[in-house]
Image 1 (cartoon, one colour):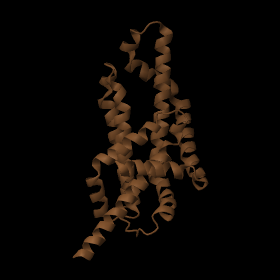
Image 2 (cartoon, helix red, strand yellow):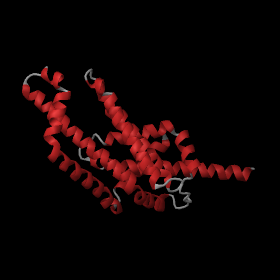
Image 3 (cartoon, rainbow, N blue to C red):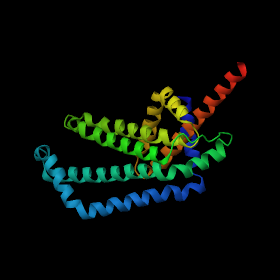
Image 4 (cartoon, rainbow, N blue to C red):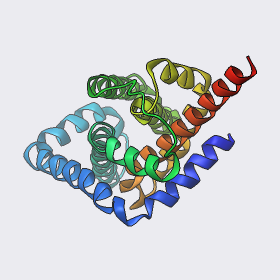
Length: 240
């Protein structure tokens, strides 16, 4: 757990650095503009879809203005979720190299780059994470009707964060075997970090900083563990 807290603290520190101001802004702008355009063109169709999907439940909500407000709130929540999810994907695929360079140069300059990952692996990992993320939401839809759906966003975002960023955080510096070792040995810590960084995504205003903050946290977590792993290997080699 100390590695998780340390990673979060370091991510907060790096988040306020001036050099990453533009890195924070452009993925959010691209994702927001894209989904606002989609919403403008297909908003009516989507509203009809959500009304049909929740029709039976909304019919039992009185008065009518409450049902309308609930549907509007769900539409806004989904829009924000799509923007954040798209920003996460943009960050993981296109922004991570720049963030890794900034963090590694300042905090881990001694780490040798083994290039165990590549852009193809990053894209495949991103598609896998997105597919399972969407599947979690679809499979757990019935839980919302009984009130248990409140846990779904947290489980989904914890999975998304740890699946999406654990590979990219290590891809530049770790070898393929080192990536496998760190991910396997820190499975629960990665989920914990994914959950804690995911909470930021549900705080208004701060949620738009969440993708970069999450990326920074996973970079620090991954490189810190890589540093420890290699240090342990060197000590064992000396002892032998």
